[in-house]
Image (cartoon, rainbow, N blue to C red; front, side, top):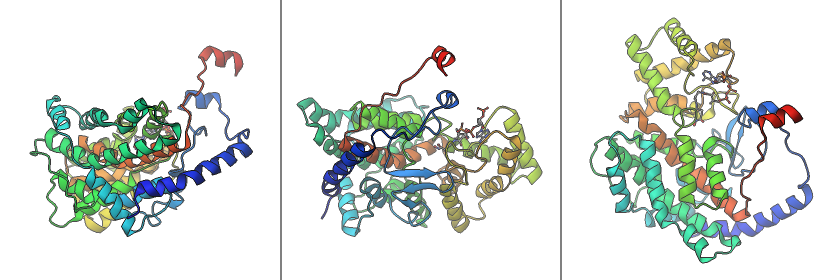
Length: 424
Ligand code: HAX
């Protein structure tokens, strides 16, 4: 069976040669310039790093290795997506099985992880628990061990891949364990080596799923959140920490700490809170007038409408559309889902009138919570953990590629306000 490691190893000489030629031909070409506004404004739009796993087109959304997410990726399993992210090719059945075996061989969560999680304060945020668990597993890092032994630079990718496979293999188990420990659902449920990665996560959460639809939702959710090019807070953080040759446990944990911010991954917990607040306040779906007034009150109170707006996108996020389609098919009458639809129909106009957000349309976080809620996963502070399990695929694939191509340590130049005054 061809393994992911063999496949990627076979691609490395070609990738390195291509980059050598590209550098020689184009190294002095200018691809971006920076205004003072961008320097103060989160470097928005500055082209200053390379990411080949995916790109985000403002008008089309997420494109993984040349394939727009709505054009043939929403029915793919997470194993296929991780293979695609790393190699640029869709795996065949044997290759999927080989990756599933890689995960099955590495899926046991060490006891010390459970001990640490159980020792944390009972009210800990699930993201703090997840990221702590990943960090304590750094103890096992092959990358750090091999680096300490004096590994050659050309081999960095190999233990980066090994650590990533181990991390991805334990990630659903740890994440599901966080849910069960944090919310008193009972002991963690072990990984079923005969099930795929997505169905395993659904099963290990322990959510009753007689129809199998929750598994379907997880198989959709995990591909949809997997990657969003290189400059978003979590990917960029992971990239930067990894560029110091911190191993994948350090790097992914750091990236996920960024995902835990309310302007990034935590928005999905905030979104459902927003929807439920509306449902509670109006005793169900509001009228259009009530909804608009509620949105205006939120904006006038200095708060954002969670799940709306985006740093790059300028269209309804196709990942939101994929969730909307799932909801229309599987739970069209669900009252919370109906409010999500209503917000989509009426809130963009409010944001346009408000005149601040450059993109008044929904992002990925606007709809997923309602679906999770429908299937009984109601503890919404947990939602960013689900996002994290998925996003770990993007982070790990970017890390492995960066170690294979010898990406340099991140070190942009900062300037002082005085410097701007004197020189800009
Ligand atoms: N509601 C109200 N105001 C909004 C807004 C929203 N949904 N989206 C943007 N704005 C405001 C910004 O706060 C900013 O106001 P100030 O000038 O007063 O600072 C102004 O509009 C311009 O912002 P922008 O250029 O359109 O957006 P940014 O690139 O600065 O920020 C954000 C992008 C996603 C952070 C932003 O749209 C936002 O806060 N949205 C709500 C939170 C959210 O949904 N986050 C999840 C994003 C997807 C993601 O990363 N998931 O992980």
